Length: 214
Image 1 (cartoon, helix red, strand yellow):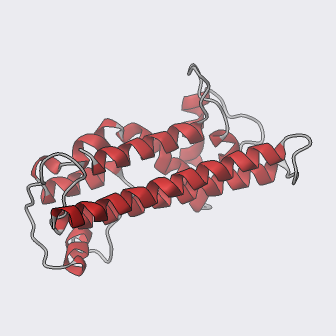
Image 2 (cartoon, rainbow, N blue to C red):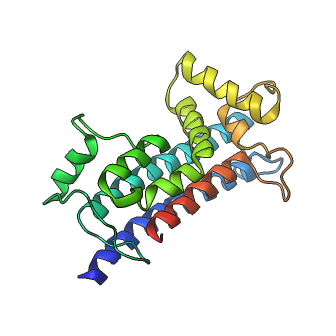
C-alpha cells in the first residue's frame, strides 16, 4: 500500500515537472525563432506572446500540483521520502477532501502561497510539507502570481500591480513593455544571467520537489 501511495505522489510530481520542461522548450523555441534568420521566423510580439503562454501554462500546472498533492496527502498518501504526515482530517474519499479544502466555498484557490500554507496548517501537523516551503519563497510566489494575473486578466488592477513589480525589479518601466518581454529580461545583478521566466520556473520546480520529498 505504501509503494502504491508513493507512486501516486510521484506521478503527480512527474506530470508537473514534465509540463515545466515543455514550457521551457516553448519559450526557448520562441526566442530562437525571433532571432534574425530564425526558421520559422516570428516577430518579437509573437515571441512575447509565446513566452507568456509558456509561463501561464506552468503556473496553472503549479496550482494543479498543489491541489492534487494536498488531496492525496489528505487521503493518507505518503510523501516520496521522510515520515508520514500527521493528519488532522480523515476524509473518506476524494470528493470530501476537495470539499474540505474548499472550506465552504465552491472550490479552493491554490494561487496564493500564504493561503495554501494556512490551509495546510489546518490539515497537517505544522502544515507539513507545505507551510515551510511556501513561506520560504512566498515573495517570489507572490510575484509570480502578479505576473500570472497580468497574463490572465485584462484589467487595470492587474496591470498596475504588474507595473509595480517591474519598477521594483528593473527600477523603471521599459518602453513597449509586455509581460513576455519582462519574463524574457535578465534579472539585475545575477550571475550567470537568468531571465525572470527561468527564475520563476526554477522556484516552482524546486518548491514542488520539496513538497513531494520533504
